[in-house]
Length: 371
Length: 229
Image (cartoon, rainbow over the protein chains, first blue to last red):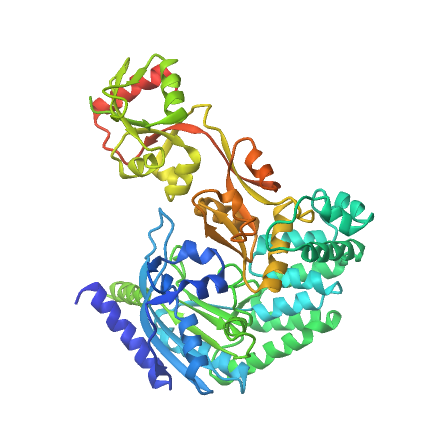
């Protein structure tokens, strides 16, 4: 059997496992609307996805993942609760000198079930853990919901919190904003001068800028300046609170220890207690699903850099000692993505994907090592 | 006669390239009729090709030419992982142009990328789509904005008259090449303080992908000795 055929057989075996666990197999088009993907993921998707053009349908992208089409299919005609599995190629542009594949198979499992989110999180993780168990992978878990809650519980303006929440997935930018809001770094150049000039009357000031061109109107400019004025008048975020946030962001512990620390933190930041309780419910659910919770690693910042729209539980399974290899499996809760696609509708969803070619390669390694 | 050098085929870039080499003892002139793209060289063992400046990056990447003169902006935009593909032999000191991000001058609240990011978030919330930046330098601008942590924008393609897109309501901001800034000012735009994406100039590039025979290396050595590289 050729490598490609063997990888497809491995993929079929993985999908059969998810089907046997009660998931309905679904398919998705290879050509996806670029407009939808761009609106959702932003310009970065253009660097990662292959774009093509149809004279009638306009710009299209070769499926960079299954998440969007599966959510769309579910919203259009799915009844809840629902469990889906899929198998197919995804396409990702790679760096010029990268040896990573630009075309590979994914097998996925997605759960749309609002009854008990903790149980759904645990169900997905336990299934992935079981089907991958022969490979001896290193699991890692995280919870973007904890980070979002930590931001929400800061005692500062709603607008600052919104700015921080928006950049949770861009750690460097998040840091710049946080340093500014705590007063560790000064406001951007020219901000003070602008606010001083604004004292003399906004309308005249805006009119002095030049003729009105473009869609962004004077009302929008005025509104932003008022926000800047409010921000300049707002108290800086306290050092103690900022330090707690740093502790949370750099938290790397076993799940049990992490939970204990976060529970202590929630005593001082009561806004976090809801997210910490949710974490505890998930741990119970994982335990009931037969997962060894005590030994499970937890990294609070896991999934921050490459998994935008995951906004709750996140997980990955990594091949130990092979840092150059992409994760064998990743997943998490993506309620925010569904909310964007659903125009505000709440469709809680959690799921994950496995890369069969990595599973296949690791099986081969194991077989060679054992012979 | 197999070391191939491509230079821009017309206009000031060609003239300045010829002047630059002439000042270093390598004479170049167009041969044949005015319209024929052919050229002669003396003072170096070179085969001279006249190509459109915008095609020279592609030829360097394909290794069909050993050396090429073109703008650093074009090489960075057109060749993914350009440092692995070409080497900069000599900055030539002409063809200067800055790739910059510019916004309407009336945006008195937007002077930095930081402001642009915040304005983009508000714009998206108010208008239901991402703030549009018109450009033809997609890769350079996207990487620049990603590194700066700007979100909620989209790039719209503009192959010419980019400064007019804001007025025509097809974009909210632009990223384009400017040398003096006159066209930007005439179109009521201003450059962001930290909005310099790339400072471009004409550069003599060496292709790492070309077939470098011993004779080619020897010829290059002679050229380098003359140009002092």
